[in-house]
Image (cartoon, rainbow, N blue to C red; front, side, top):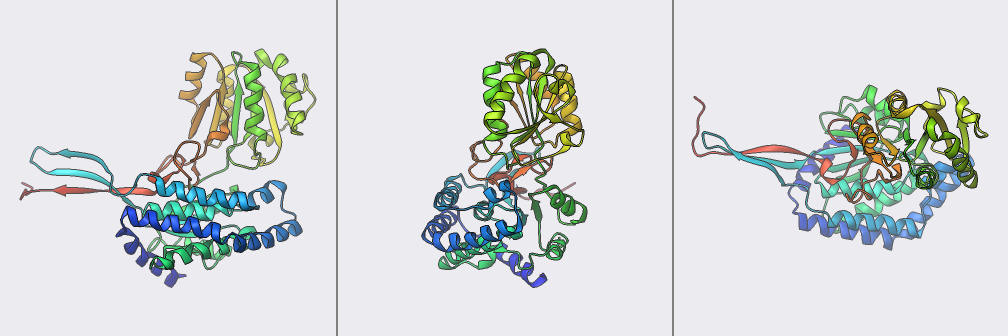
Length: 411
């Protein structure tokens, strides 16, 4: 492990010298290689899918794992979109001249060696690799065991493109020891690794957070809420709520709890019930909900559960204050939405809900680097430092101060 990480650290200096033009050329080569060698990737993915079926992976995890021609084209397209982004390294973030004539610039630079630990989705391998490469960072990737064959094939294609450009394979690589013990060693190697980004299940995030000596930007569970306020347009509210839950239930920005204002519950809940029944959504509700529609009883534990499945908890609340209080108690700081035509209620919700992304009259499903115009993302941070929300290309940089003098000395 230590020799592997030494090689990665040494490769960082090579990457730091590459111009934006060269990095973009390499990224286009990677994208072309992913498409040209799709057969190799799909064959590996078929092995992972069969093993997933035999091991009883959930339908949500199987959907995350699955690759086809369209998804590989999407992976390649994402890499090209990253190449088209503005160069993130070398930006002058601020600049000023001090009273004694020192000219100071705050300039963006790569973080260095970034370890990314993720589960299930093999497209993360190419997304994370491209984002790290574009931002001048060496990528050490650790995918889930359920996608091991797919990730190995994707990484091999990417490394082949690097070598074709005369660059070291160590710039983008899979962690050689993919066991839990290997991860435990990686997250303590702060001599060589500058940042760890875990994205996945609650157990993974907790393990990394509790054991890492390397700085961590965590991408925690998405326990997202949508609150239907008394001043909501109920036709639009039903449409948005169904999209937030059902469009893709197995992702972190899908709604897990629906809060309905008591003032409109009698009218709204039957309409919501009909819409969710059409999507075969399993509904759990509090006593007030079950007095109006048929649903299974919801417990306090249900309101703390990220289902990642077509299951929804519902609660009737007395106004915006109780909705905010519920979110404070049960939310994960990911994405929260209010549906209302009342400007004051919307502003109160926006200002008082503590989450990375807070919406008015839109689905939480938009919490995504692509939807935000960032290109691909390395994940959705629930940290407050160093990045928060969809973590795009600029969030994979830090900064240094460059100071220009003409003989100044400190008195």
